[in-house]
Length: 243
Ligand SMILES: C[S@@+](CC[C@H](N)C(=O)[O-])C[C@H]1O[C@@H](n2cnc3c(N)ncnc32)[C@H](O)[C@@H]1O
Image 1: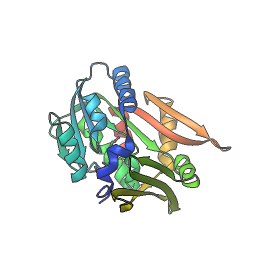
Image 2 (image 1 turned 90 degrees about the vertical axis):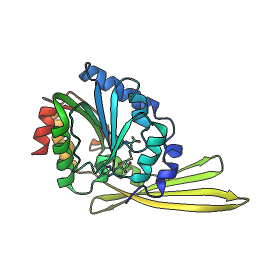
Image 3 (image 1 turned 30 degrees about the vertical axis):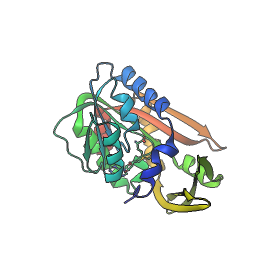
Image 4 (image 1 turned 90 degrees about the horizontal axis):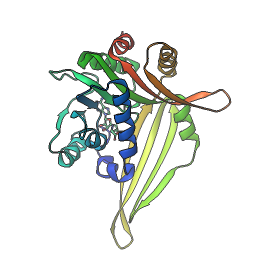
């Protein structure tokens, strides 16, 4: 299962997430001002939830045991559940559900994306909102054609390169060289797969004209391929996606 090696370095590599978390808080405040309860699916190490928990009663869900272990240590006051986002069941509904940092792209079958929308629809209150982002095909292709990302963190080195695409699947090739002593390093190497379904992006953007409350997109390249979509959908629309 992915993140089995990267989990130890995830927070180090991701750095400060407060800008992203504040952006999400603003989206919730704008589209669901009376929201009290928030579920983050694929919450990882809980960095976004930590900031959301100042304003909302939050719950985190992820399927990775080590990512959740870190999240629980960081946020002992928050409830976390280890479940799969394609099949989760929590015996309550939420005002807002959040799924960010291209977590949906980790699901390599389109049928699994639909399952997520279905589970989200079942767990949202009637007028709830679903806030999510996706990496589009354009964004993944751009990353794959670009250079590797390299950064030193004190004496540890992280090198991340997006490679692809084979049958639409891109690999995030993550290498962390952890300093041991003198000039010796231990390598942690993991490949995390992502896929983008252009059809979904088109549907989201088409529907955005009518029902999606907010969508941001960036256009790059000559053909104007969409780089990244961020959406807020009311639950009624989430249900439409799921069918
Ligand atoms: C890029 S991380 C994002 C974590 C967090 N949302 C953040 O912004 O830092 C992707 C997360 O998705 C989780 N994930 C991937 N597939 C999943 C699935 N089917 N069900 C639940 N979590 C999943 C991984 O374990 C990982 O924690």
